[in-house]
Length: 484
Image 1 (cartoon, rainbow, N blue to C red):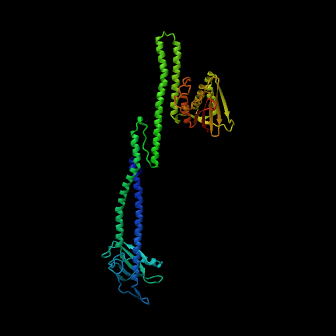
Image 2 (cartoon, helix red, strand yellow; image 1 turned 180 degrees about the vertical axis):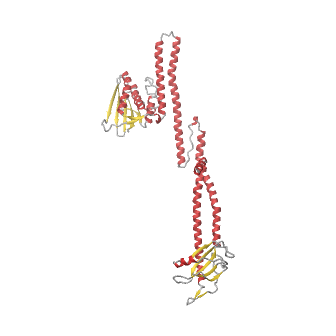
Image 3 (cartoon, rainbow, N blue to C red; image 1 turned 45 degrees about the vertical axis):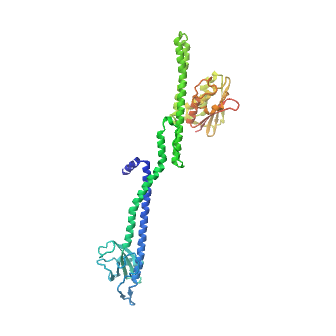
């Protein structure tokens, strides 16, 4: 629940602040962990240096203890060497010699009620350790203590396999405590300062990094439907923001093209719809002025124009369905030869009206080469019918329109060839545009939507539809779609 609340708060802040927070979190945590590690290493190093100095001091003191030839002990007054520089105040160390029985044989310094431990130290030394160390924190029973803690070293005086005498020195850790305290204070003030610098640096860097995005946002807000020619600024750096800017500009180009295409479509559709309506209005006016003897001819003409309007509306509805995208498709597995036979059946009447022969040719007709395709049956039929009808319309009478079906390994190819006038080279790039008409457009029935619809259907099925001129005469339309 707590994590969800944090995530909810975090998701509501700006990306600039989020980037800064992430930067501070990563940099700050890394800095804290590294400094804590460094601080611990420093403490260990200072502690080792302190112990080494204490050991050397202990060796110097042990040399003042005299052991007789017969094993008797002679303890002259223990002296502190004031000529050495040590990491603890000279003359403040507490020194004593202790027997394994616990008896204190000699002392130097004001111990008061302080009784250093010794049993575990004897055991460690008997196991082979050169000396033992421990830190004494509870020093309330040491009169006039020089520090908050003392470092106690226990060092064997006799050289037997099981020493019986220990030299114990407790030195105040004043200098070590001071060094640690100073470094700790430095960390206390330094780490928040580092966090502050990291926060300001993170905000500055995130602001600089997102400045191109802000410019893109400002520019995008100003782009209106009438100003689609504008583009967002592209930064010089070759990074993801540059790719984002280029992607947005490409999207704007597509939107601009779609708007322009839609405007042209609306204008052309309005013109195409207006033409039959104008004809019908004119004929109605003529009928109104006449003696109503030509009413049958008027009805036939009006029905013809109604049919023209219906055809235009149907093609526009089909275009709208195609523009709706893949979600409007009813996909199924289709045998290409069935598609061809059905499209030839539906165009046979138009071909007979011009005494045109429809020729069907199959290439690579072997059982292992035959493959199925997947698509919307109605739309693919519409595609083939449109290019076949186009070939029939532009072919002279008593000619032949050839449809060639070729099975390939990965795709199936449909070719429709006619013997008409062909396509002028300057019109080839625009042959699939809406309301585009061929060189005989004024003498051929149609509205220039068939090939545009066919191309849309091909693109929707991720296939290709291309137009070219034959080497001798006529045009050739090639539709290729992938096999299943």
